[in-house]
Length: 382
Image (cartoon, rainbow, N blue to C red):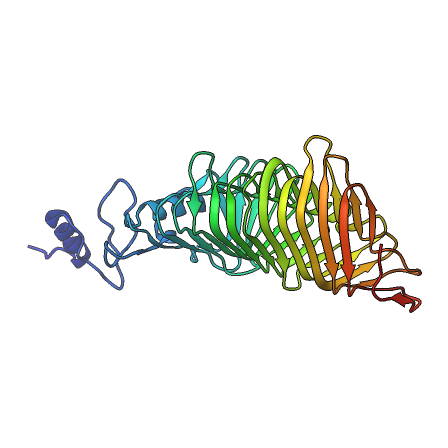
């Protein structure tokens, strides 16, 4: 009898044995039908999963399956193999404890309309590959940290851009979000870059660029305590930082370490309502063009604004033609403020440090106001 050809013999062995053990440099045999094979994991107990090995219609589905396959104790979902243009068509949820999601450089994630990245798990981390890791938000999409009924704590967002339009309400929405870190982010093009609602405390924003939003940091809820904005840019927004918490209380917000605030069309900082206790601004760099102010305190017409302590210490303000501090208080409003060790450079003529009316107790010390003509008066009182 004529011998069976080698390739057919190998195929017969595969069918007979029920599995494929045949590897050839010339012939590759695939056995089995049905659902795609699960990701290749050397050790199922390993805390690392590689997201591009999972099935899915788009990057969002692959990453979600990758996260679900992590151990209960959490681990690393490595999505750095998903590069180039990628899509997330459904909300992506990081709800397990201790998830570390890694994203690579040169990757652009398109968030479909209504699709969010939801961070609800304890200790969740999303770390990108720098400025070329980008999320582009559609209508009503972006990032959400925490929720109305649950608290999210010890989270980190680092090393990527979030870009949107005013049809997207916020780049990052926080509610019941605590002990978090925003680092090396770029947030631009939203109605509010960050919408910070109630119970968001012990949060640091380090070298984060909040640029070309309507409102950059929008504080709208009570208990936004122990915030520290360090470095980065707050540039070319309508309002850079707005605190409008109605009858709520906020304490311990500091803006430090050379934070750069320029070109904010209304005010770099606007305080509208609530009890704001302990706002410290130190060693910032600011420029205000015609019609722009650095710091405005003015009630919003609904709730009083009460500021037991506001301190501006050190730094530089370059002002073209408008007094940089504008305090307009009503009978229900109060302000105690200290401005010290500040260098101010104006346009063609000197101007006061602050334009004040209402119940304001203001002390200015060791502050120099200089005009472009060289005239100066140290210290310069309102």
